[in-house]
Length: 429
Ligand SMILES: Cc1cc2nc3c(=O)[nH]c(=O)nc-3n(C[C@H](O)[C@H](O)[C@H](O)COP(=O)(O)OP(=O)(O)OC[C@H]3O[C@@H](n4cnc5c(N)ncnc54)[C@H](O)[C@@H]3O)c2cc1C
Image (tube, rainbow, N blue to C red; front, side, top):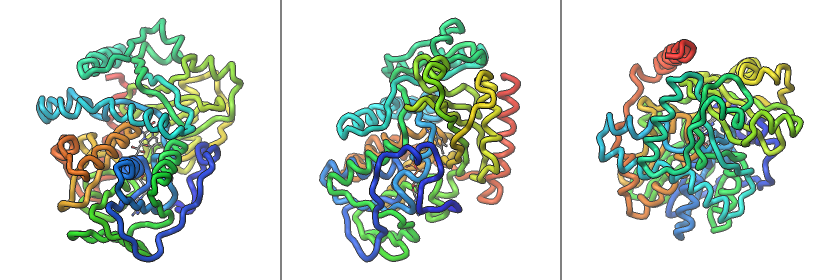
């Protein structure tokens, strides 16, 4: 991790975060039922489910709560997974697709339950849109609608070109799929609210406490520079920021950077004209752009993927042309915040959940669509630790492939892959 661990990245979210305490670093020895590594959605969601069930849980966070992708993302509540049930069925069979498909919309429901139960102030708005540039992409959205409906989703609407004026004021699209069960949130405030909920149930979080070693055993030991937690179970939830702490997890994922900017507040009328339904939008390209309004009428726009988690020199220069292509009426708009964050890509683009030995659990690699899955993962990890692992095992039984070429070649290979998909997006094939 090359960024500073003592404060959140300089994002719009950090600038508009709800008040949160600074937690102490771990100093000395502690025991717990469960030790969680990482205070993003995966870690906090697991910890909160377990605390609700009466477990003593300690969370160790290298930086601050929500410091990673969970406090920097586009805030888009996108249902299902980065690879959908049709792909799961084709590759892993009908039974795997049925079991995983039965959970495809649960993560979004968990988020809404959390917000309501713990009164979390995180600007929740309903509705996310998949915007199509081509008829081929729109046909794919029609197929997605049919697929999701077969798995029980009843909140979808296909939008034609004429209907797009009620969705987004841009000539770029031929139509879209609107998911009323999707939506958007201030992601850092969601993470901070969930952490506060966990602490209200007696849970303990140590910040500024990077884990340096995990020692397997009947009661595994989790070590930091100045302390140790012994626990019956460990949950590894460091995702794209885990580095090489556990090499056999690192080799199966590729950390990827994606970049976000936020404009200065727009005139309220202009903001509403840009996105009349106040939905969040992602386009249907492989290397997609995603955007939405914030509660104070800024346009928050993400796009671009710098593979291998390198920090881009000038994020604004990278994202501004994309923003202005979608919204030429915003040419020259002032950008107040620019930042980058890492998500974790897997070769299959399906998340990886599993166990190391019998008492170290992990979940990682949501491949860009993690806001909902991480909340589902928290519930599944807590179920497995409590002895009900059937749903967790639906994911754990999927194959996890290492990236071919090992650590040295993963980045160049993926850069080549990104270039190919960019060409494909440009040619509309
Ligand atoms: C810029 C950006 C935009 C995105 N937009 C969207 C979106 O709009 N919708 C969507 O669905 N998904 C989006 N994603 C993906 C989504 O944010 C992630 O999938 C999700 O937040 C991952 O959560 P996590 O808890 O697994 O990991 P993280 O939130 O990254 O948390 C991991 C935590 O572990 C800590 N950690 C790592 N190693 C250690 C260690 N050794 N010791 C202690 N702590 C450690 C880190 O400091 C970090 O806080 C986006 C991602 C990025 C980066």
